[in-house]
Length: 381
Ligand code: FAD
Ligand code: A2P
Figure 1 (tube, rainbow, N blue to C red):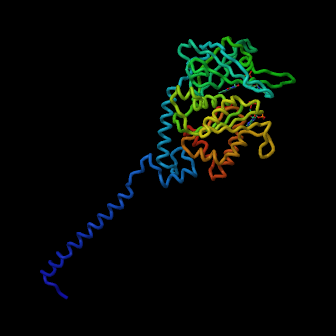
Figure 2 (figure 1 turned 90 degrees about the vertical axis):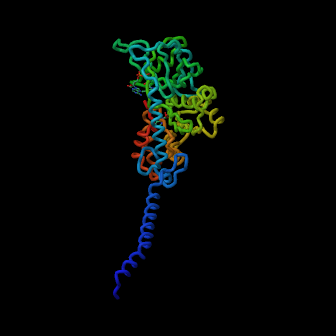
Figure 3 (figure 1 turned 120 degrees about the vertical axis):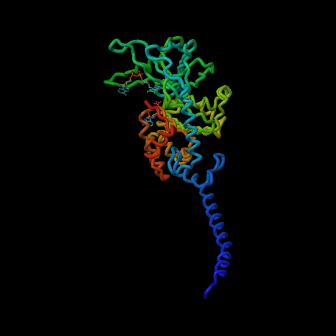
């Protein structure tokens, strides 16, 4: 069939609306697809949806692909805030060549009848220090024992974790306390006493003591009131934990600091006998006053037995509570602090490896991530 010129022109014009409609349809469709893919991420105060489920199986510690974006940026912000706060923490106000000479205010035993060894709580007066001897929870000080070593030289400094909060036990901002175990061991049938620990355990109130520091930023507390803090301590490793717990739960501390801890604090404490538990009454009081916020788990090595019938160590308690611990660690606001015997580190690592594996998590990969995120804090000696 043949068309004349007019029919061709009219036919062409008749198709124009169809072409225009087709053009608008394609444009509208393209716009809707692209707006779906450009949707802004949810604001941080809204629960994230899909990525959050991945965080549950792999703790959000750095910025891995699996991590929920809002959680990561919150964690990054918290880390940046911590870094800024750490910059203001005092260090080396008093150096070994120019120590501060403090005086002993108090020195008493922390042990009960039936305990083994000797552990003392010792408080020094820092009044009159210029510059002012400030410190914060989680730091250590150095002590230079009086006298000389076998070569006639002054004794070297020994470090001790501070056991009082920045305000001191009397809240007057001018004392510092330590928790010191006397080192004693047998050699060739003779009892050897550690130089500095014996000097401190024996020291009488009023005596002058050379003090250096403060030092250390490894064991500082997070700033957030809703952080979670898991503490693993053996023996005198309780010292920094006591400073955290005072800051968290002592009414005078809460009032003075205006820092109202509302996260979860969980202390695992290892001691040979019940009579060796340090600051136990205070911790029991915190537990009864803040049952929602404080959990206190004791591993009494020579009174309790682990699953294999051996001595009960804190790593055995970690295994017992592995599920709850990992649930907490999945939260980017959770920090772990380890302090005390160096020997407990392999045991804790082993317990964490087993506990993590049961949840499909590779502990040797996760631990460095926690460390990098400034959430895994270790001070052992
Ligand atoms: P020393 O006279 O120096 O004797 C120690 C030496 O004795 C050892 O180096 C070793 O050569 C030898 N020795 C030890 N045990 C044996 C053994 N069984 N057999 C044979 N030889 C042995 N201690 C606390 O009590 N409380 C604390 O809060 C505390 N916090 C610390 C924090 C940090 C960061 C560090 C690094 C250490 C901390 N210490 C703490 C340990 C403290 O610094 C001293 O190391 C401890 O008090 C022993 O010192 P000393 O002078 O009594 O012993
Ligand atoms: P034990 O001495 O019964 O073997 P203290 O400093 O007061 O002696 O307390 C230290 C606590 O830590 C003790 O209960 C001690 O048990 C325990 N301990 C000793 N070695 C380890 C270890 N490798 N891992 C964990 N805990 C340990």
